[in-house]
Image (cartoon, rainbow, N blue to C red; front, side, top):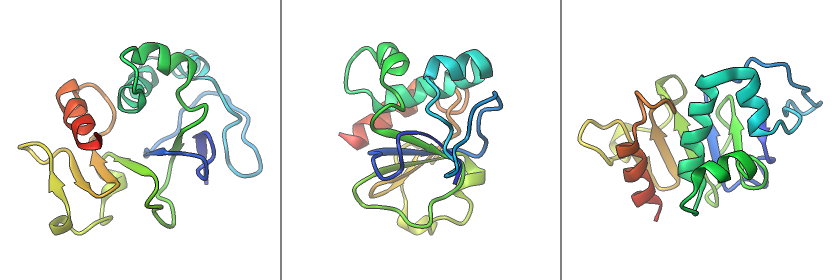
Length: 151
């Protein structure tokens, strides 16, 4: 299973995205991108991935300076990015299923609670169905709602 960041076993937060970065990265025999630094991903994949990683940092950092967290800690010890759904969901992790393509048929809508008036952010226990992590689709207002739910 293609992934970036710490191992799925180590991760506290798992972001599930439809498409990996397109830069040239070494991939190990387990399908894991060889620990690229966030700055490497941004350098190779540009502004689009900078936005994705910024939203991840805002959702992951307990510190007020998410920029420093993004550039020095994100994906190093407690976050993992997967590019397909895992076979099962571990109750000890928080899963962010990003974008409609990844969410299709995942959970019965009746089991989900909407956190916003448009239903863009829906939750069920440790499973968070959220927009694709781009500022137009996942603005700070939804990030704040998500953080309030997590705390």
